[in-house]
Image (tube, rainbow, N blue to C red; front, side, top):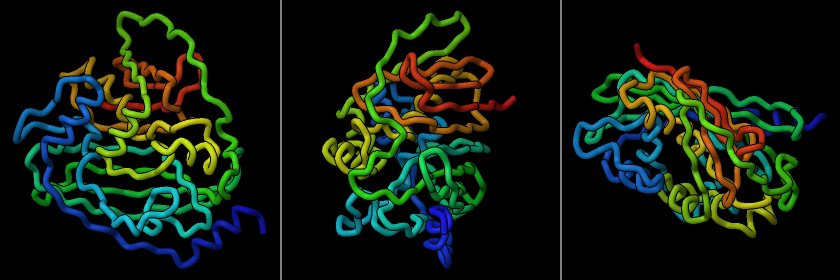
Length: 290
């Protein structure tokens, strides 16, 4: 039996049911994330629309402390595959916007498993899981989101083989007159604040001895969702009059605290972000209404 078949054996009989969650869109999380970015808040009060993907700060799961595993994630969860020595990576996703969520909205979300597929690649065998989240307001579908995760079985202390040292940043090149650019300088304080905003207890983002000694990374890992949100800062800042209809993105390589990240794009909607002089950490495409 090869390693991918071995992972598949753990998935037999695993058929999680959809999960329904409800909640109210409050203004505080958007104000807090804007502060993390050193930007003015895009929301002032009831009825103001959330920027695309800022719904990530709402309807958060809050498991009990005793429910957490050694890695900080819940040991059990609706869509966590039952793998031994499970390690998780956020791989990307897609968003369709019909109507933006607004401050004050009562929102219902249905989450479900789309696929769970074992695969073998350059970094070994993994299970790729896709989750689907449908957000409704007053019974009407507003957002449809899919999120992709990669899970592998990895004994403690084993290097991942994806990144063995911190990247060295070069000076970013000049910006064309019609280009978009934003910069992020992630440090441990920023990663802590983003973890708090998303109620994310994954230790790779704040526990240096754990992330280096157990998961085999060279430093604190920048959250994949933060990288995706950095891409969306480009149209938000440089094309504020255009409404996002869709967004797809792929996480390609990890980024680490202490190394600047630069996002580039233009009105065509092709976006990329990473350490200057290195391959991108995330790429994405945004589509607009009209």
